[in-house]
Image (cartoon, rainbow over all chains, first blue to last red):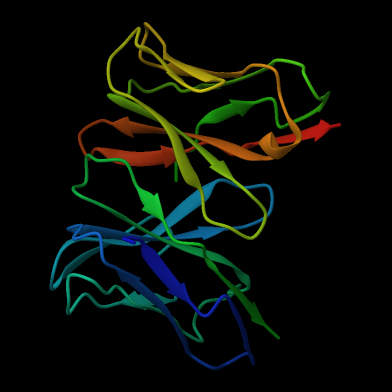
Length: 112
Length: 111
């Protein structure tokens, strides 16, 4: 079945460590996205990529980095510079920037 | 970043009741999307709207793209316990074609 796979489901890290969240899709979608979700808030865009080897900052890119070396994969690194990294992270993809997003099941990151 | 005004924030209803929620924006959108998110999962697309005035159904769910292109409505008829979750609207448009999410409506259904 086609879909978006995020791993791991839960991730725990110590403050000061970088951590990378995985996102893989087999939908043959060109565009991929990373969102952050905090309780009581809507989804906020961190980074997006419309094509391989290209990506753009979203609304809250500070303290995060991404890469898009393959069409299927869009890993997100939460760096030690991110001041409040504990959150639920959602990866999404779409056929194009104008098409509806399809989401993965998220990774809950807890940093202590 | 910009967010849509979504209301109500939460709803606690009895099974069988109908539900209405809406989103409004100061900006004009070309697309309205409605998603449902269950605890610990990613949002799932329910309905996509592409034209002002469009009314689209998906089972017991009906959504409308407002005539002004600045609002959208989602109705759920005859609610059941599995309707529980957070419902998000999302609007897309403008020069950047950016997708903007509402803050969500938490729906609780009591059997």
